[in-house]
Length: 158
Image (cartoon, rainbow, N blue to C red; front, side, top):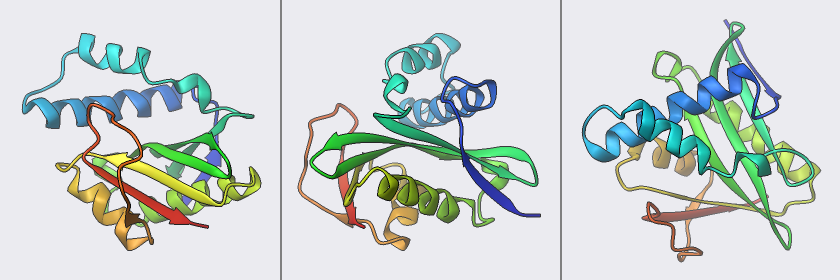
């Protein structure tokens, strides 16, 4: 069984299903209860997914043995910088190496756009994500935004 990571339109059925699962998990963890359909739909409406397509960004889908299992978005932020967003690996596919391959794919996409630095923000409770980022060279940096859920800011020079 192997992973493949490829660009995919953020609005494709598989990408949309992955984004749905992402919002379900992060919202449920944040509120400490299962997220409602309305809450997930609100997150999807307000996530600026339209920027995760060329020329303003990219969206990648990872497939494990052909099954959609992960996703990540890249949004150009100007001056050789891009933001990493919507990083998600479905629970059934965790600990299989897919997260690292997804980050490598995003970094390659960023280089193709001329990006020299990738940054991101995340929440304190998303410890698995923070561990993945640290393992792959992302380091804590001073806050670069004031997002309502931003508690940790990380970056990596390419």
